[in-house]
Image (cartoon, rainbow, N blue to C red):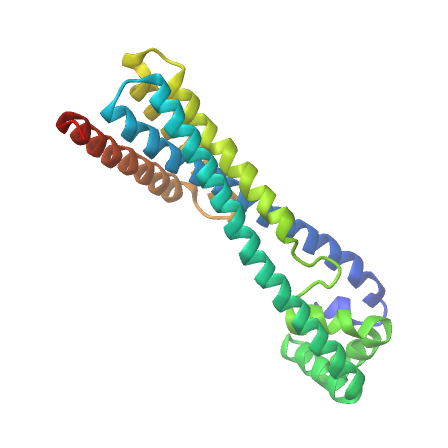
Length: 245
């Protein structure tokens, strides 16, 4: 951080930050995609296995699976769109306020930026010089990144988030749907359970690695949660099927 703030290396800062920000954004999107696929696997598997406990009719299983897939993917997309739209509105409001403050009291904002850099470990002299150079280059971008943690050139896009959630959930949901309708009647539940647990092992491991965490516990939690969901829904479906409900 100190090297970037010195006059000799300050011109390289936007380039470095852009790469770091882009990498962080890609990792966040990838992690969200993995978790979305995981949700699709678990929710659809629980649904179709529950129906399989009540009936062996392929058409009923296919209808239930497709309905669950569409309902889940649309719900995920709508929820993500609303959430990210709210975040984007907040970012825009914060940038508008910062732009207004820079216009009305530039000296106070310069001192504030220097103080923020100083709290990050720079000496007062270096922090002041860095604040001046960053402000001369692009004061709004400097305050957005240092003070607000926002990249004004890469605000969150609610449509991208919605489509990503829709596709991730759909991709995950297709696995249990195909596993329950393609095999012969006696193999449907075992094949679905085995394929789902294998897929959950992969998504648990991937999400843990993306988060720089140990994969063992993440995989165990993921697999245990999916197995519990399928066991409960299968038991409920079997009970309803036996009672003729």
